[in-house]
Image 1 (tube, helix red, strand yellow):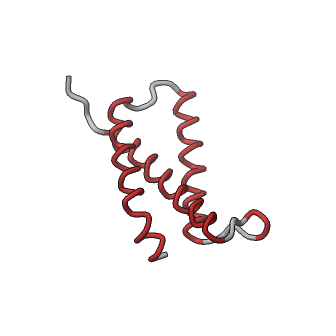
Image 2 (cartoon, one colour):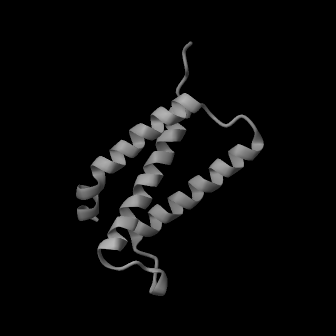
Length: 95
């Protein structure tokens, strides 16, 4: 876990900042359909990040070695990006 955090923190921070800018620019979803789609994508990304952190993906679905490490980092960056999108959408926009 420490290795994952020490290697991935610049990408996670970049994902958070880019997501915050995107969320601020786009704003929150206006209708029910996009809200449900955004919630589903966020739920799946958080589940992938939790599985990456906990190492819960067993058997033939597990990606071993360096490629598995890259998948774990990518899932954490996606979760940070989505968290940034939510935080950016919550910030008030001034005209």
